Length: 417
Image 1 (cartoon, rainbow, N blue to C red):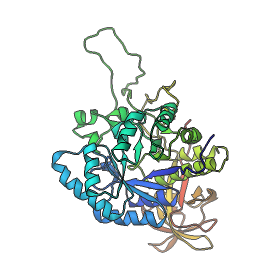
Image 2: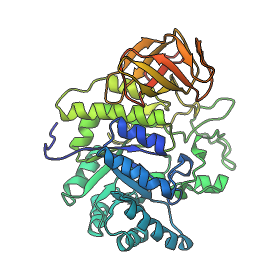
Image 3: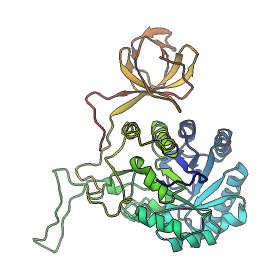
Image 4: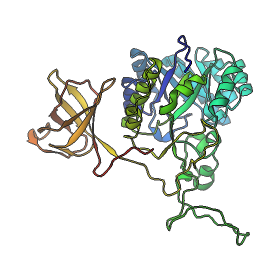
């Protein structure tokens, strides 16, 4: 591995709402990306109202974390004036950069919010050094590369572009069956425009394959009575080879998932933080970090296109369900120096359960749940069953707010790859 010690490698995590942002920041992100209630590519994420945006950005900056705001939908004529006003609001709120797809939107940002860095979205499909350099010449500070590139192609882009152009790529999360997310299926089949943040994910639906006019011509495809999932992509996971990604010249490692849970934001950020810190400190990869990302809800993992055309299928044909082997049972609200804690219920748990305590920037600790105290009914209990209720419990060590308690689902076991 040949890492330039003067080059900072950024870990960029998703922040779909304020709770997810807090988790990403506290669990180790160098930067987060978020959206307002419009002009972002994840309508289902919750996102941030205008009055929330400055509060979110201030929280990031208080913790030394950068904040990027997405403006990467395909904008229409009647939206441009409103988009310009929103760009001004983003600048006033103190954001560090905006993420754009459209060259016209880029020009609007340059005119109305000139202090903002401009990052070019993966939706732009930057797949070669000529495109990357063109965006740089137009004023972009960073390009977010198409997911379909190999490590060799990324290295070629790095070698043939301006040295101060940041290169960002996705290293973890869901992948789209269409090139760089340019999908027409959702609009055609469900009336929801994937290029405007409303994807209905028809690639995850069940399908039967039939050719109307070519009788006797068959496609080799596995199918069961409920249909097949020929477009159902596996999830990307590059945590085992971050050294190769960094060596290719990537300066920002991006985790997908603004529409996923606060637990997902915490676990993936913490795992990639640990793996990246080990890498930058010259330590070998620790398999515990891969085991960590297997403890979030995910599809079967794959290496994406980093090593060229995959030898194994990148689609999971049998179903579109997630692998869910662990449940979050509670999140710590407060804890004293003796480990006496108040936790907020997330899923049912009991006295005697074997759980793990996941600590921001700390080790995971396994312990057995002792006596519980219901703060509403003001009674001791062995059954934490009321959603979102606060319960008192004793933890093995003192922990900060937002530490997480989780337990394995019964009958679940090994990692998914």
